[in-house]
Length: 324
Image (tube, rainbow, N blue to C red; front, side, top):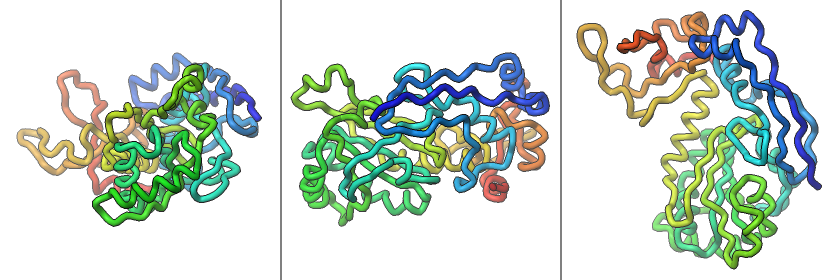
């Protein structure tokens, strides 16, 4: 059962909202409203037609109107071609897993963050270590209220047999608690762009790329990582990304490079300070009014351009900022 998701135009920004967006992004948004184009991707099961939906309250989204809510509206929920891009609603699907049958991926992860983690093939060396290392991070991800599912084009029976090797090879005592999806017909891998439908049927070993999809409570793709079969992934970085995405979603902030090991020593006045280690930036869409209301005393870094876009808030300010 296949169908395309219908076109759905983004909501117009009110004059009040436009005037409150931080420059220069506000001026650009006021000049240009890009219409949302129809998604041409076919889904693996029927889904109801939808317009842009409100952000899920179960995800503890930031209450700032010019923060996460406005920032997320900049990403179309559907692409104009067959590509799956950031901000798009991810394809739903039914499947068999090592935990039984799923009638809907979206129903399984309802109102939660989730990681869809693909590996090229069972009984391959790098994949064996990756599943083992991901199992070691599972409890930490669960504490973040983030679900985990992995996938390859092997059938479920192969997954179950291979997991014995995974557990035996890992140097730590592990238990693989997350489900592994069997995608033997390659339909899910094709829908998510992990495999080329035109050539995979001709390959003796149709490797699914090493992909990581981090999906928010509204089923929107927030981050994707693609690795070749010859390079294993760093699970610490995946956990860091989940933490950064959740913090941005909940607090209307953006994490700098190398966060949380950033801004350990910055100029302040006539001297320097270490008080901003691990600090984060306000999203560019956040108005000065909402910034002052939710993060009073935030610090604007002085730069040669004199443009006030580097607005830092400390870890302590982030912890005490309200969420819905």
